[in-house]
Image (tube, rainbow, N blue to C red; front, side, top):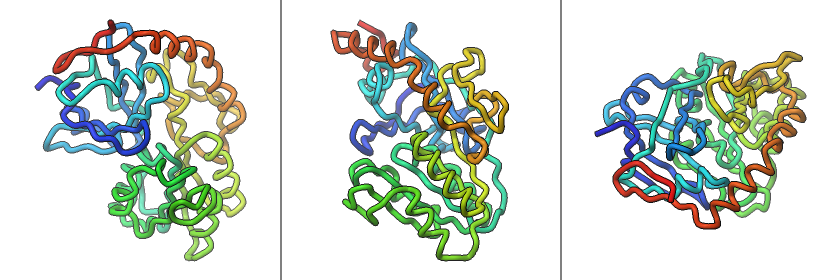
Length: 289
């Protein structure tokens, strides 16, 4: 079987799909926090996707994709048995894993997918893992069962109270941190605004915090420079220096401004896609038509 073949496809939320992709070298070498770059077709963009899980024996990696733009919607059209044009990785600096003691792992929406392998590794390293999973509403929560298997405790928070406790990520962090014993480290992954406010709370509580800046990556190799972020007053590149950084040092306001830099191009691409661009290629490479 050629690398890039989709061996499984499962919807796990509204416009969110988990793919099992055959990539034996990546499955064997990947470490928590790392990602891959995939291309759907020859003229398509490079999509950075975090490795949510891996099975070295089967030679597969799990990729969770939310259909929000042209390329991710194209990928959503690929079925089991189809192939990605290419998949490169593992890329990025792996998460620093050690036995901290008690850790909070906070995932917002689709951010739970990249948080899963980190939580898994922290649990295996002997940490007491307190997980907070957040979303606007119950239907947007993903991988709750999988996170429960690698956590000592899971607190589910929804903005509207449709599942778990009503409240935000910041509320969940305060709840679990207030139960004792003292929390030694926090890992927070989700939308930038969520990471910004969660990091403000952990700073107030004196908890060292790691965030993942996956959303800003484009090229994934440091060549394009689009993932420039300011961390501790220094310019860093999310794809090669990260994607993980000290959440108390990230300039989130700058980050969120940069995320909107290509809004017009993204809108244009989606309008073209909606006008008839589609993928074909059952069992082979996708092609635009």
